[in-house]
Image (tube, rainbow over all chains, first blue to last red; front, side, top):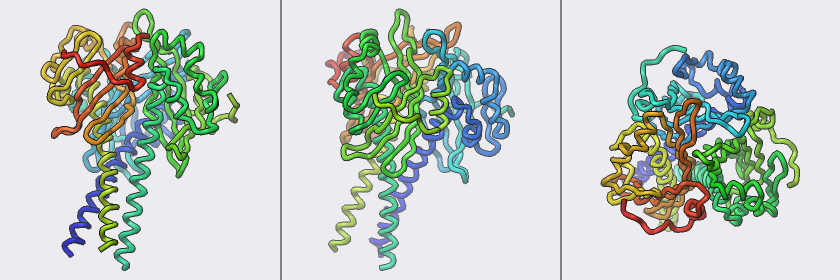
Length: 167
Length: 167
Length: 167
């Protein structure tokens, strides 16, 4: 009995480790799905990334899970798409704690110009994620341009993001 | 006996989950191997990424597994290498189904210029992969510049790529 | 007894496979932590990535684990931070062998300018890592600009890096 109990404990521990790796895999896929969704103007694919009530907070304005479908219709976005754009999400630094996770990475937007592509945006991103019935989703994404201001540096230093402002 | 059967099922399920994570790890490594191979002009390392009979389809022309070694000898490539180039593959969005997988990502080519580096190419990529006796390999890679045309957007939206054109 | 022995072997093999995946996860996080650490000038977070006695070797000079905290105080770095910078580490190609690992990737530094961002550096990186009591850490990082010289191509081809030069 003792052996079998020991073993049940060891097996459950291994299952938990595999679950943790699967969580990370799903989070990585979530982040990697943003670019293809916006660059192809697939509004429903963007919406699907957010948790109900989740937010996307940019420096000037933002979106909620109820308005995020409009992101592919904004003037800036339509300009990007007409020119040709690649919203590249860089390798995420993932920290999982149970049913929530924090991800830090950069987003860079490459836009086609007369001679090659220009980097029209480079921003620090903090993603607060949560495990939902639909899988890992975005509770809150904060995006701050790396333009020399403290806002991006604070995010990258791991400080808590500023209070949420409804979009 | 029932316990032991239950357990065998649970163990096999966990083994399958670990296999799935290993598949993803190998696919990620495959994608991450392309840049170092071409930027160092290591033709055999490029060839090794493709499945027998696999293709690499660009907007103007392409390669098969039998001709892909020539990619490091093309005029454009030699110009890149002389200047200094980095073929960067962005975080792949991986979808595995049994022995095949579909990957979406962007490729960006940074080329050294008089003052820093320019982005000479930014493209959407769809990779159709398959598990072979040599591990996960490329059955088909389709590359479309993000230049405002529909071709890249269609790939990123998840639509099937156009019929294959032999290189 | 034979069954139970067989099973113990199978279980240990699965544990080892999971450990290997966890090693990779930790290595990926190590690489993804470099950018946020330097771009936020968090010296202690940079120091924490290196093994005791580890080195960071650039083309002109370098650092050891004892001097690496100064990297966020260099003239070039202060210029980057004042303008706004994103040190982006691209998807790593990871090769693990027991308690050591070799990683190849590119680093690109995006710096804010009057009109968007410029790519001020693009370099090939080889990271020699080791498992320490504090987790996976950098024993040696070699960084070579992709500027057409052979140094970057040799790193990307998988050749051994040049003899270490103390920083």
